Image (cartoon, rainbow, N blue to C red; front, side):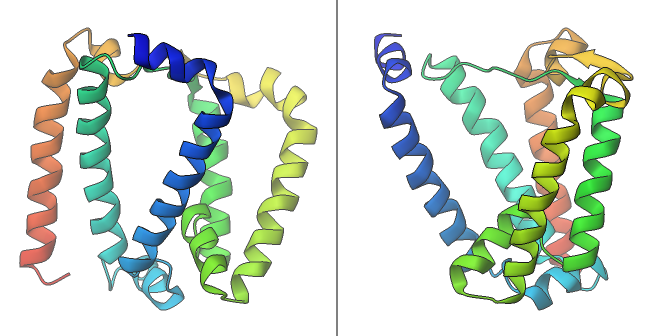
Length: 186
C-alpha cells in the first residue's frame, strides 16, 4: 500500500481532504434539503421521511464504499471501542439536543453555513456541551462509559464472518426499506 502509506505521512493533506469532504457533505445535505428546520421537525413528527432516506442512502454508500476501499488496499479500518454505557450516554445527549433544537450536528453545521440564526444557539450549545463533556470525561470514562464494554469490533468481526456476508444483506434490506418508504409516499 505505497499510496496509502504516503498519505498517512502527510497530515496536512489529510486535513485538506477532510475539509473538502466536509464541505461536500454539507453541500449535499443542503441539496437534499435536510438542513431545513421544517424538514427536520417533520422527521421528528414522523411526517417527512426525507432525512431518513438521505441517511439510509449514505449508510449504504458508505458501508459498501469503505469496504471496497479496504479490500482494494486503499483504506484501513480503525474502529473505536464501544460500550452500552457510552452508547446510552451518547444517544441521550444526541436525542435531547435534537429534540430541543431540531438539528443534529451535521445538519446544524449545514444550517449555519446557510445562515440560519437559530442554528447559532445550537452551535453554542454543542460547544458548551462538548466542553462540559471533555471536562468530565476522565471520570465518566472510568464509570458509566465503560459499562457493557464490547471492544473495538465491527459487526462482521463480532459475528466472525466475512464482512460481505453482513454488508450485502444489510444493503439489500436498507434498499428495500428505502423503496418501501418511497412507495408509501413518505
